[in-house]
Every structure is written in C-alpha cells, then in structure tokens.
Length: 338
Ligand code: SF4
Image 1 (cartoon, protein in one colour):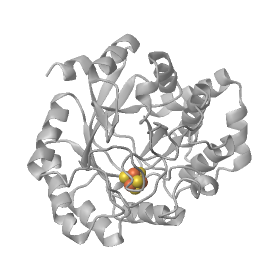
Image 2 (cartoon, helix red, strand yellow):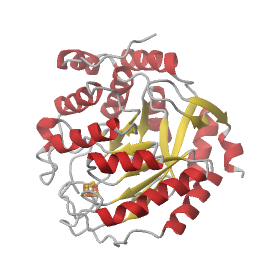
Image 3 (cartoon, protein in one colour):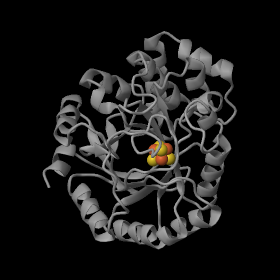
Image 4 (tube, helix red, strand yellow):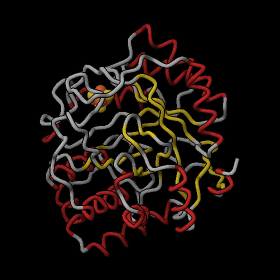
C-alpha cells in the first residue's frame, strides 16, 4: 500500500513526467487500484450561484469584470432556486452539489444566505461544496458549522507562473484560504488549470505544491483550459493532450487517496482521451450542461461513455477525513433512470 508523502521534490516529479507513457500510466493505475475501485467515478454537479462581474483578474476567466466576454451577469440566486437545482441534480445521480460564486470573498451580508444554502442542500442528502473566493478564518468556521463538506479553492498553477495569470490575489492568499478551510474541518478541493501557456516545470510546480500541503486535498480538479474569447488567454496555444494525461497520472501517483477530478475542458476531449484520463487515475467528473459558465458534455453523452467503459457513478454516503469514503455504488444507468 502506498504511503502518503508530503516531501516530493522537483527531480522526482521530473522523473515521473519523463517516464515512457505506458510506464507512467501503469504506475498510476497500480496506485489507483490500491485505493479506489478503478471502475467507479464520483459525479458532482456545479451551479453558479452568482455569475460574473468578479473583481479578480484571472486571465482565463469569463467571469472576471476585467474582460469583455459577453457573459450575462447574475446576482446571488434565491435560496429556493438553488435547492430546486440541487434536487434536480440528485435526481440525475449526482452525489455532490457544488455552488460557485464569482466573488473575491463573500461579504458579511452574503454569509447568512450561503450558510442557509449549505443547510438546505445538505438536507436533501447531498454532499455540499462551495467555491466563494478567499475565506477568512471565521467565515470558514461558519461554513464548517453549517455542515459544508468541501470547499474549492484552486492554486491554478505553479508559484513561479502564477503572476502571469493573476495579479489581484497572491499565491499566499490562496494558501491561507486553504489553511483556514482545513482548520475549520472542511475537506479541501484544490487543483489547477493546465494549458495556460505554462511549461512542464510549472505543471510540476503546481503538483508539487498540492502534494506537499500539510494534507493532500481530498479532491484535486485538473482542468484543461477552456479558451474564452475576450480573455487574455483566449488564443493561447493548445496543449498536447498526452501531456494532460501525464499530468493526471502524476497527480494520481503523488496524491494516492485523493479524488482526481477531470474538470473543465472535458467537453473538448473525445471519448478516447477521457478514457485515457480515467486509466491515468481520474475518478471524479462534473456533469450537467454548464460548468459554471462554460459548457460541459451532455449528461447523456457521459452516460453512454460510462456504459461503453463499464464504469459506475459512485454515490458517496459518508466520508471521514484522511480515510477512504464509505461508498455505495449505483449503476449510472439506474441513477439516470430516476
Ligand atoms: S476564477 Fe474566480 S476569482 Fe478568478 S475571475 Fe473567475 S470567478 Fe473571479
């Protein structure tokens, strides 16, 4: 059984990335099978609860107020609307419901609403996840007390490349939010975006930061950049897809017990590439037609792909920090037939 390490160095990561493709995938799949059912994928649904006009300047993001992307802005959604969407997601087989708001951080007057959303969505029997920007310690505590299961806050890229992507919040700000979330007993979801013009050394830097956190994030989204017209990264050069698969595989080897999520950018991937990502150790996806504001493969296409690959959607019942989820599997087709 692999031991969890938090002392990975750059040379080790370079050596993994440099392995022949088949050797790397074999190693990743071997690690994966020690900790997870290789044919089960955790499925989440993501809802944007407040869209656009974000004061941050993340150069990839359609929601940043710094760029003209033609996005329709929306205020914070009504609680009842969020609960309705969560119920619909549950009916379609999602086990976790993620709510995202385009904020630098939640304001005091927003907190009662988001806390109520957590309680109501959790009351439906779903795991809850939020991404609301930076959190102060007391905000993280309040969310934890409301029953929030996961908080998403990505590191995005390596510390070295970060300044080329975001200038309005620092890498340390992000690390502090992750520490506040951990201290509040909320599970951490943190990953990054690949294909933003960064070098392999930056992908190595990102994964090394994540793996060397005091605790591995419970969930590690690896996003492929979705190029949005109007953003500074709207026409950045495409990343070689095998390099994306390698990044997933190295993430799996470094963080053996974490759910590695194939996240934004999946719509542009054909079935074969997605299958390779699953083989490399990805075991979580988002489904639904929208991934915040970028489109996501139709749930129908996901269902067909799962059937072709003989894979199941994982229904997570309870999770305990630092241990594997106590999980109940349901066949995707059964879940979708509700
Ligand atoms: S990624 Fe998040 S913080 Fe950055 S601009 Fe978009 S919504 Fe705002």
